[in-house]
Amino acid sequence: MVQSVELLLDADLDARVRAQWRALVEAGLPSLGRHTGATNAPHVTLTVASGVGPAHEDALADALPPADLPLPLLLGGYVVFGSHKHVLARLVVPSARLLDLHARAASAWADALEVAPTGLPGRWTPHVTLASHLTDTQLGQALTALRGLDEAVHDGTGSAVEVRRWDGTAKEAWALHG
Image 1 (spheres, rainbow, N blue to C red):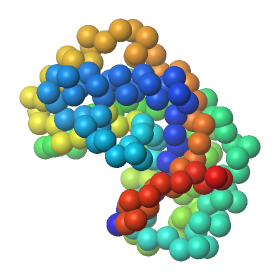
Image 2 (cartoon, rainbow, N blue to C red):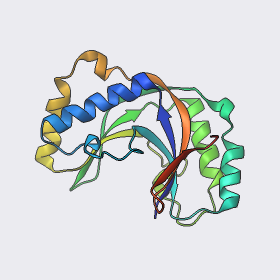
Image 3 (tube, one colour):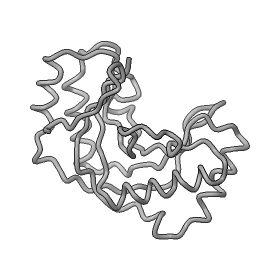
């Protein structure tokens, strides 16, 4: 199953993304707001693999010290992934600090089992997912629903405040430096 390294957002930015999730739910559309698990939180995925070992965990902790945070983030416009069932997300404007942090995370897991190619430096698109499995029609409806939100909700300024590890096999998440 999937193993990932994620950046969690500060409370204000998290709340603004959750407001976007709610707007999609209220419009009857797919939304990450429909996932009610305790570990569901707006995040930026840094790297993904199908299997990591203790050496990868140690390398990751060394590569991403607590001093890296908080990391200023700016959410940009909407971005769409996929060609049949779409993923709608907010682009994260890639600052030099964010790209450096990502490169270090990717390097720490470079020899892990089945590293996702879309998480490699030069191929990574930093984003915060709003919804997945959208049809073409739903994609248009989602953009319309989001357009109606207050401008303050669209403000994408904030910061990443925690590096989190997600273990999809155990369905557990924890702070890297907890």
